[in-house]
Length: 462
Image 1 (cartoon, rainbow, N blue to C red):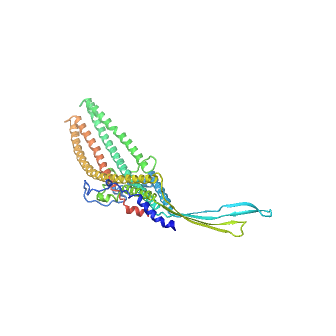
Image 2: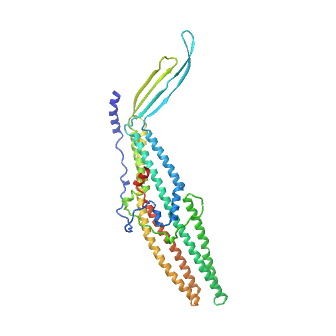
Image 3: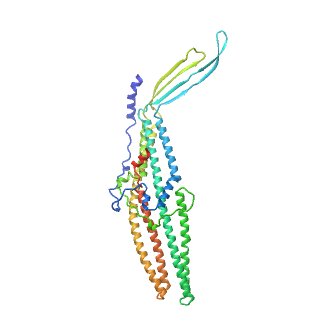
């Protein structure tokens, strides 16, 4: 009675001794900007299968293969299983521990008359122990484990989004390389025709061998573009094969680069982004986990009340009747002098919480920057593609004029050569600009969360 009556006052005294709970630094607060620096007009909600908006079934098939076979996603799923086991273990610490034992003995006794007899005995028993967790040490540890599990699940979603984005941008790069190869082959065919004309004119004595040598040099300069593009295509196919979890091999194609559709601009304000990116949710739940771990470390500095009990029977051939035994007890453990161990653990937990708070702020600022960069990339790459298309058309007209004048003998071969070089450069630049524009959309969709939401993640989790 006296022990129970003094437990609460001692606990209140201990609570006052550990001091106030430290708050996270004020500099870790996140304030979203009111709007994006680059505005592209009204947008649309992001679909979970946003890559299908490019209008290429081959791309959608590649993404599906990657999501099904990627080793990175498999490893992320295994980490979730580990986190679930850790959460179950933390919850189990809050439940009573029941154990049983049944020791047996054998021996020999001697009666007062000197007659020996065998004695066989056993003492089966059941014991139970339960930590009442008065100040929430175990409860907060369980909450920390659950928050860490949510962070691990969000990390898996981050890997999934990054994988889909890598496949989409890698496929766009592959189609751009295919287009570069087509341009190189078309240009090589034109160079071959130019070389044929130059050779015929040189053989007839109409021009000097200088024009012939220039035509030969230009043909071979263009010729090397073909194997270079083929090598780049082979390497890019191997990159995509790795992303989809397969050995190196050919990648199925769908529509051409020019036929890939430009998706709609995703909508959303900066404040919405905090709820739409899995990496931000991961950082947030990591912060929650460290915060709950801090509470658990502080609770460990307070008294702890545990209940124990056991019951059993004593069985023996030497006894006429079994003997029942039982015990019930309670213990209050409170740190008195530990050399500062518990205080150091609490300080370390505070530092880890502050690190997580700063990490969350940095992740948020990084997310805001990525979206603004992506919005600007979509706009500027589109403007570049338009400019390169105009340049390509103008140079194509200039090449026609130069070729006609050269065939008619009104201009030197160098004029046609300059026009051919300019057109090749413009066509390759246009291919790259179109690829950059489509890749900018991929980057934008990834920066905006790729259709991820907390509500959808909770629904899948349930």
